[in-house]
Image (cartoon, rainbow, N blue to C red; front, side, top):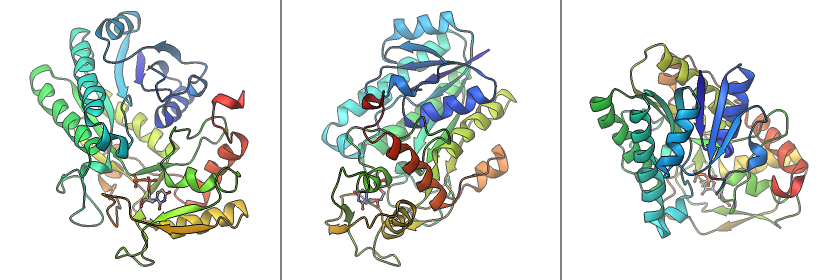
Length: 331
Ligand code: UDP
């Protein structure tokens, strides 16, 4: 039986495919390559280029492959873009998922693991955040992910498709092989932007606000290695295969670092001074986001293995140093 990975050419999707194949699974990847990279797809995965909003295309993939479970990463995920172009997010994330679910129903596939986000919480009511805390997204991206979670809940009642929703905190780092890593265009995430400085692509890193109510005034986030996230997907598929009930899990290390601490660690890892400038706050940035992942630990048996920030940034640096222009210009 095959696991179908939608968005398997993207950052978290490609790392998950690498882990699944290392685990001996048969994998089919679907990706429209709008933000994903063909070079990131594991050579042993069967690749179908196409869009999840194309129901004929999806039906064909389901007919060709004997799919046991779906892992769904195929979504738009840039917060600022989601505010400027909300309908793109409704179309891709929500309409895309609706068509996917129709195809799963039509083809008798009843298990799905999908990417959700800490952005569903908005401004947290407490730290660490647990899954039952208030969800009040502060941007369209988080809103569409929350709507997807709700869509799965109602569809399960009618069609018995069980789901696991994984709410990621700050995904970062790169594969141990150094062959795949983060390559977004435009890049908006802190660690790859910091590493553009020692790579000579940026003169300094901007710190978005230094008067938050935190120990050094900069925002605190829970940085989680992409390979640890990837492993959580494998555990979630196994959980569903073993008749686990639909559920939602946070995925983070449970430890927060300030923006300044992340920059300092990158200085240590790269040996570069990495100048920084204080810039205005970015709209909608909560001061502090830290996950409680106790539930994933208890129920899925998940345990992050790369939980030191230095190790996370070292793995990212190995990737960015070797592929300063990302996938496209590296071959
Ligand atoms: N950040 C920053 N400078 C940058 C990019 C990000 O100070 O150039 C901060 C941002 O305000 C947030 C943290 O770094 O507090 C992580 O941002 P990122 O965009 O990586 O992830 P997010 O937490 O928004 O999902």
